[in-house]
Each structure stands twice: as C-alpha cells, then as structure tokens.
Image (cartoon, rainbow, N blue to C red; front, side, top):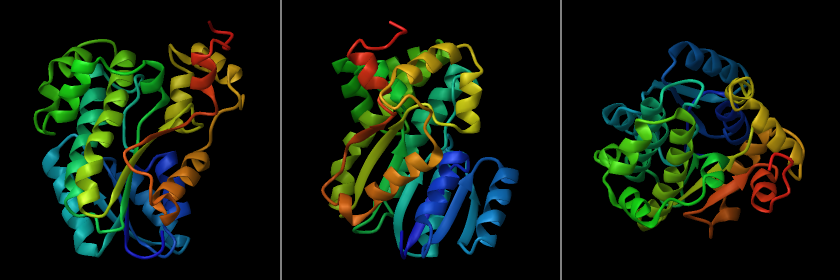
Length: 276
C-alpha cells in the first residue's frame, strides 16, 4: 500500500506475493523465523526496487512478536500488517501447529493492535479447513474469544486439540483464528483501524504441495476437482484479496473471515462433491 509501513510476517509463497503486490511505495518490513529464507526474499525484493527491512521473529514467542511490533513502529507509521506465517499438519505435531497457527496469531493481533495507525488495517491468514470443520461449540468459542493471548493455549479445548491429530488441530486452530479476529475488531476499531481474516483454499505453494503429497492429498484433490473453480489457487489470488482488504475500498469491512477457496466449501456444504 502507498506510504507508511507494511509488515509481512512469513516469507512463503503468499507472503512474497503480498509483499510484491502491496509493497510499492511503502516501507516494507519482512519477518520470518527462517533467516536464510528471509534474507533471500529481502534481497530479491530489494533488487526489484522495494524499500525492504527485515526482522527475525518466532510468532509462538510473545516477546519476539513484541520486538517485531516495536521494530515496525520505529520505521514509521504502521499502516498495514499481513500475517501469513503458519504450520500445516504435515509439517509438525499438533501442539506446534496450535502454538504457531493460533498462539502466534493471538500474539500478533495484540502486539500490532497497540501500534497500528489510524486508518490502518491487518489481514490474518486462516484456512478453509476451519470452515470445513464447522463453527466451534458455543462454550469453546466464548472461551477462545475471551482468553488473553498469554492464557489462550491453556484453554481446555485448545489443550485437547494440541494433544490430538495434527489435521484436526489445524482445523480447530484456524477456526479459532477467525474467532480471535472477530473478537479484536472492536479494539482495533478504537484505534481507527480494521482487522480481517482470509481463509484460503488449496494454494499452489510449497506448503500446499506438501499437503497434496501427504495423507490427505487425495481428499484435497477431490475437493478441488468438485469445486466451482476446479483449480488450485495461486499466491496472487490471495494477494489480490489482501490488497482489497488493506485498501480504503474496504473501509466498512472489519471482523470478517473471507473464504478465498475457489468454491470448495460451497460444494462441500451443498453436497455436490464427488468425495461425499
């Protein structure tokens, strides 16, 4: 976005696409836990003319996230933050999936909710998996929405998810991300800022391809084939929607989780999938 500081957390396919699409004219702060990947992406984007700065971050560590928010504020007016970092079920055990995908999101929401500028916006990447799993039970949703970020992973439903199957933990954590985004909309609004989530479908990134090659790959391919679009998504599909949500054109949009899945969930819920 023009002007100000754009923070992109996670330098995978979606993060890079967002940085390219939204970073022109901004001071771009890239953050990732992998220093080699971070340096490589920063070098490439710098060669393309972007004003790039970098910061190591472990989103599962509140202090690390707070340091990132301070670094962003030191660069100037924090206009936008896009949080794409996460782990998929084939990458890690359930406890790490929950700690990174949900705990990390909660820390980023809180830290950047304290520094985002009036008129600014945040976009947090969730997943269609949270929609396929269905809404959280009312008691669990209330607990997830009201817990402090520091106490979130001690909520009983989170502990159960962290001790179980990685795929189920991923779906539960992503559903909980949507809950946290909704719950934060009022606090961000008091700063004159907006916060939204995007739930991508199966995206053609390294992470997405790893999932397609994993235990759930056949089911995922059937879901994609049965969807309205009939194709995998691209990182730019997500970046284009992110650009809209960060822009003034979305000034009346906050606290929502937007499905960008090519129609997978629509087909699933309407019983039109051949995997039924």
